[in-house]
Figure 1 (cartoon, rainbow over the protein chains, first blue to last red):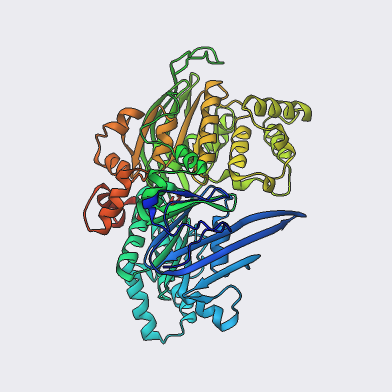
Figure 2 (figure 1 turned 180 degrees about the vertical axis):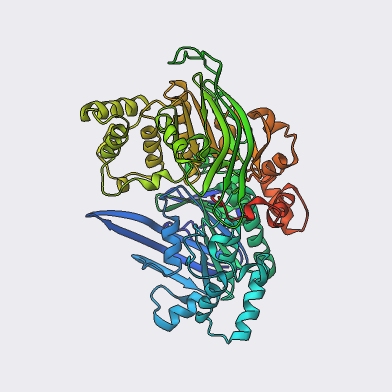
Length: 297
Length: 319
């Protein structure tokens, strides 16, 4: 049982499962339940303050979250709520202003050099724009082989690894390796990016709006790949999205962010089907309903 | 639907635009790729037509043809647009055709292209953009006149007038998209082609843009909209009619509610089945995938993954 993530200093931390119903802390954070599984990655009281032309922007405000092993945690919120900033800090691509990040019990907040490179083999990411993530002048094959430098494996092993990881996302070396990015569809490109991330055999995969640019059917396709990876490899997934519908489909747990703060969290059922925080309700109300029309109002 | 009298004489609540037999190919390579294959439809005064389909189905290409902004390697082989009692030949087979389209662009048909909000110059204020648009159509327009028009328009749509003095980076994504929508309709086009205007926005900004577009049609800033997107829930909110495109052709068209409730074509059903909304149904489907059950979602993705889908073709792969 890991420590509960509630940042408030009040003693009533919510260790209890949801049996006692959702709890609201002093600063308005609604916590339905806390994960009981062991956390692979966690962050405690993480803050990020940007200085923008003399103004301070508190992009991430005292966020504490746990990523339970083999589970999908969705972080949802509107643009500018600090989701991606949080992801960049967890990936150690951006320094934290304050707070700690722990990976398998080890403090990784300030690790450097070889240690950081080792961390990056364990925690991998897939970003929003599959086109921007590719070098246009390289084939998929050379892109994948280049990223294997980090793993330091020999050629035969590399080829086997590439084949294996392309297999996870439903591609074969024959139909992917010789292609240039522009010769693939958006869904294929994004699946290649997932395969690339998997080659490091990571424990944690951060998917930052990884499916937002794909159209509906391809989106489901990539979400199903993530579903399978969780089930087959026990991968822990941090799924960042503004689309609460995708979170409903994929995630085990949901954390809702607003203005850099986590305002509500719990299992998917708890947060989406009985939202308590006003912001979560608004977010749900803004989701266009396939069977409703703005015109009829 | 409200039936506010149209600014132009003639059509009161009748047909605004009649599009017939649009055919487009991407040429120049070893082989031509037919992106739009004989599309025809009618749009009534004050109507919003939703054009939906997966990436690569030709919806953006059709939008480009209608807005008369097709440039090689995209060629419009044939197609006619009947609007305001005129018959415009959409074909762009030679330079003369393209030149003949110039008077219609921005005034008769205006285009809100994909990702337009990211095309705002970072070094100019929004007001300069307004002037550029106005001057492109009337060299002698006075600065004050152009800005007054923009100010009035912003007020009318309950948007802050101060955005005119802002730079692009000072505006949020949703605001940029609304501003660019206002600018692209300054000349009161009869028909607006909006290509994926909501796709990069979060749900709250999407809703604001959709509400603004509805208000614009209501106030007859434009008389009709062709709204191109792969996002069916957004379309169901805004459009009167839906047209579902697959492989360059419209496979099903009808009133939005009817099409959503009772889809006739299997492709429409698949497309509707892959919509993920925050409902118990979506949750069930997600769990079903994990337990190996099959549902609408699985069948929809199999089409996408099998390679028979047009989205596996590189051309027009925009999502």
